[in-house]
Structure formats: C-alpha cells, structure tokens
Image (cartoon, rainbow, N blue to C red; front, side):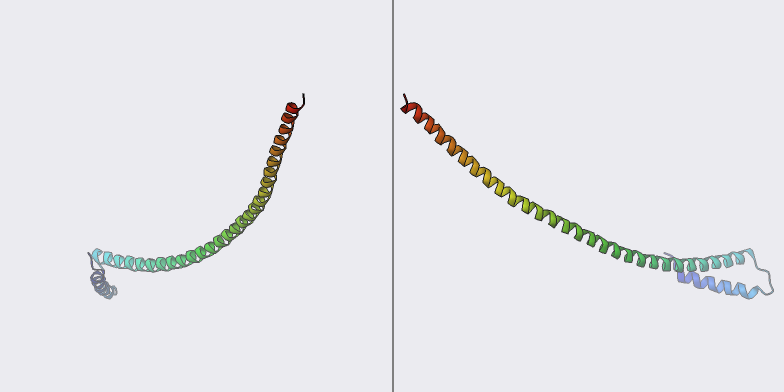
Length: 131
C-alpha cells in the first residue's frame, strides 16, 4: 500500500529544511502543516511504544494471573475429588450393609415360606387324618 519509510524520509528532509529557516525567515502555512504533521507522527510513535509496552506488561500479568487461577482450580478440583472418594466409600459401606440386610430378608422369606408350607401341610394332614 503506502511505504512508511519513503514518507518518513521525505517528511524528515522537509522538516529539517523548515527548521533551518526558523531563525530568520517566516514560515508558510504549508510548512507549518508539515511541522504539525511531524509532531503528530512523533507523538503517535511515542504513544505506540507506550501502548506496546503497557500491553506487554498487561499480557504478562494476565498470564501470571491465569497460572494462579489454574493452580487454584486444580486445588479445588482435588478437594472435590477427595470428597467424591469419601462419598464413594460411604456408599460402599452402605452397599455392604444393604447386602447383609438383603441376605437376612432373603433368609427370613425362605424360612417364613418353609414354615408356612410346613404348618399348612400339618393343618391339611390334621384335617385329613382327624375325623
């Protein structure tokens, strides 16, 4: 597009020529515009350098904060993992107790069914054999 170096070289030559005239001759409006343009370019260059420096420092600070946040998140996730492991252990204990309870209930059902059949058989036998 537009070659900045060519423009800067041209502007530098023109402003040096204008500065050499400043001592005795009055300067024209066009020359004043060139001096203002050179001042603005210098100002923009300083602003650009300051902005780049500030952005670099902000970038560095943000990276450091992100690292700290990741470490904090990792610690919190580790704590949550430990809590889940504790809950899992509690459920394992509950499962063992539940298995014992289920086993007892199954034994009781079998015992009550056998007892019911035995008593029913005795009642039927007593009704058949007793006049």
